[in-house]
Length: 258
Ligand SMILES: N[C@H](CCC[C@H](N)C(=O)O)C(=O)O
Figure 1 (cartoon, rainbow, N blue to C red):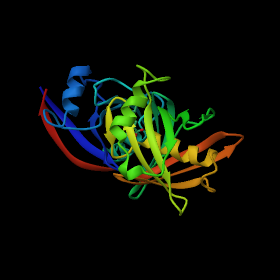
Figure 2: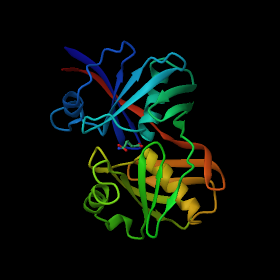
Figure 3: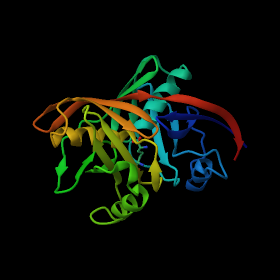
Figure 4: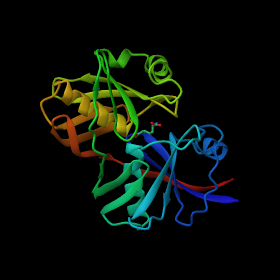
């Protein structure tokens, strides 16, 4: 059976995108893992289904490259906004359902803007913060980001206390003089460092604001794969109107035997 697929990337976080409005994609962990495999398949950090939705423009279903369905993907959310527009399945402004609820999306020329969920619980521990921005995120501030062994240290944190099997994504963040952030992320379900992680970038921006390391609510964040920005409104550590903004584009499309 031939499967039509599209390949998109948002700041280097890359995804196999499937137009599944017919609801015919044969979901299986083994198939999704193979399609995401960078040697035996198409290669991606995850796979995303665009499905019909009764009330909104579409529904997003996200799977990590380990083949398992997972929680919200911020860069994947920005890629599906671009994908929906390219498919003429939505206009420049759209709403869609995802595992963490309703999202607004905006195509603003080359910049794709995704509204994230509200964040009302930020755990501020001694040497890290933890919050859920649609996916769980552990955030640490460091001053040696480029030389850090993100995979080894990130993997240990992801698997250790208090996360264990369910795990968490692990973000290392450095604050720059110009109030911008540098970030590197070990991603749960990819079980490796990715070139950008949208929900992680959101968590990093909010963490920097909570720790008063920046004095703005419109924060530039530089990931290895590209530059994004996060803006939000805050009152009493409740963060609303949270937007993740950055590039997202199609790389290629094709067919693959499954
Ligand atoms: N790996 C994450 C989901 C994807 C997050 C990332 N790709 C993003 O852009 O937010 C998890 O299982 O929690």
